[in-house]
Image (tube, rainbow, N blue to C red; front, side, top):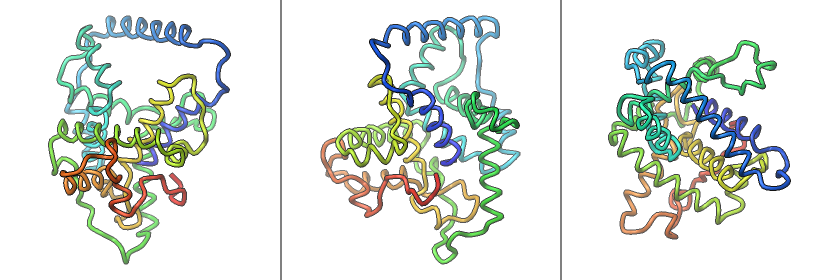
Length: 280
């Protein structure tokens, strides 16, 4: 999940922001593009009727591989925590484009993401098979199983289910809190920001940079703390989000990193920064 989601976010963000800073004010043409996009969506929804989450489709994914149940849960938490996804849900409800709860919408977005190409459309020449995010996840699990344990001496059980801790909505509130903490930390620590943007992507605007950094932080929070300790193909790893939640629960008398308390990486002795040796 880390590799599939992280790579797609990084490639898409790079394609949007890697160009040199635009000359002049780009706000007006970008806003015009956004309006045209909204109008095209309105026309599409008007022709299709309102969308909704189909539990039978989700059940089909899980029948293909039971590990996808945890992928659905974690991606649902991520989407529920995202300001842009929540705003999109509010717009769709207001315009009659979607029927169902906010969690239904997050699960619908997860289904959509799983069916999307792993690489952006302009990279189809490098991937004629149009590998989807689902394909990438399944191939990753199978490759890990074929390769065997990375470090059998450190192997732990693969049982860390997020929803065993709290319902999705409560987890999403925690995920959003953690994301805000690390967004603040990235602004205060240039080395941390550089680790989240290893390719040095430049951006059209401050909002564009914030969207990129939020995606990178979310990807880091969903990543396993110690990949080598988990069995091959494990989908229920102990993530940095789990580590952050433990830190916060143990340090309730202190404030989170946004207010100046030690960060989870200082408390746990491990770094949230992406491990360059992992290849992700």
